[in-house]
Image (cartoon, rainbow, N blue to C red; front, side, top):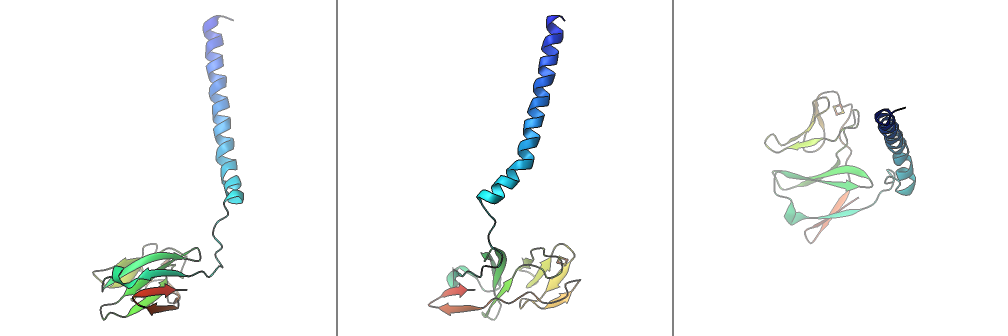
Amino acid sequence: MDESKRKFISICLGGVAALAITGFAAITYPVFRYYLIPPADKNSKGKTTLSLKDIAVGSAVFFELGGSAAVLVRKQDGSLVALSAVCPHLGCIVQWEKERQDFLCPCHAGYFTPDGEVISGPPPRALAKIPFTVTNDVVTLG
Ligand code: FES
């Protein structure tokens, strides 16, 4: 076998080995990562705090609570509503539409009021409410 054929075969075998290693890593990495860094416990309740000063009237602040997306709304009248941001239809995360003062679920065009009640679309029920307290302009959620 001449030198150029040997070099070509060597390059091909190197490429196959690199692909095999990459494929093996792509398959095994998520498994090892799961065991090394387990995902947050979806059932843990947890608590979090937000400063009332950071939430303008008519806006919403998204945060994580117990490993799940949640949102605090400061309605036009100044009152607060804390909700799960997880759509009860198929679990997409809702978005706050400041101009319309409502929530849109982008997956299937579900709309919710600022209080989380269903306006239209496929969601079968309202967004889940989250309990909260306000003390000295600090909102404690969960
Ligand atoms: S997941 Fe929200 S409307 Fe379908």
